[in-house]
Each structure stands twice: as structure tokens, then as C-alpha cells.
Length: 156
Image (tube, rainbow, N blue to C red; front, side, top):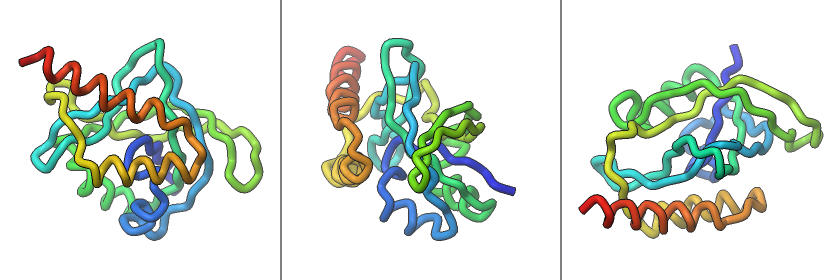
């Protein structure tokens, strides 16, 4: 049974996703309207998450994944301790056909109570590479870093 994974962070990077989930299939790109990118802390660093915000939009990549792929993603994303999963309905533009298609997929969201954080340069580079591959506007990524730092300092 096909599962649709909505990636917005480092897993939009094709190399990263292929190394984690070799059976995955790249389907297309989407925009998550009403969501904002932010960085929050885990035990190993600060990573991207999304939070609802009607004034924002987040670029995303849609992958078809197997059950084994999803189990690997669960481990890599720290599910359910660091991230939880939420199902979203999303319209994507197919990579091969350019046609629009709507699917229900799962997305990982970091638990809201986690503190904001500052990502490593390595993590930012992985994300920026993914954004470049799909010709996404990189401003939301840099704004997420700026806003997360601002919120982190405000909470101190």
C-alpha cells in the first residue's frame, strides 16, 4: 500500500532521502499554505518543523514510500518522542507529468513544547541543497532561522 510522505526539511534533499529510503519514489512538489517553517531543538541539534500560521507557506516535496521506508523515517525523525505525525491533504505538481494531483500524506511535526534552536551549518547546507534542486525560494528557510533565533532570545 502506498504511503505519501510530505517532506519540508532535510528530506527534500534527494541524496538524503535516497540514503534513508532507497525504495522511495519522488512524486512532485507542493506548497503547504497556512504553515510556517521554524527550527526547534532535539537532543542532537536544531531541526526544521512546521507550525500553523495563516500568513505563511512552506515548500514541500511529496514522496511515495514503502512501509520499510516509513519505519526508517520514524527512526530518523525520532518519532514519536521528538516528532509526531499528522495527516494532511495536499495538492502537488507531478515531477514527470506536471499534472496536479491531490493526496493525503503524512508529515512530521516537532512537539510544540520544544524550545526554538539554531541549526548547524551542515544541516542548513543539506536543506539549501534540496531547495536549490527544486528551485524553491530559499527565503522561507532563512526566515525560519531568523525567526527561531528571535523567539529563542525572547524566551530567555
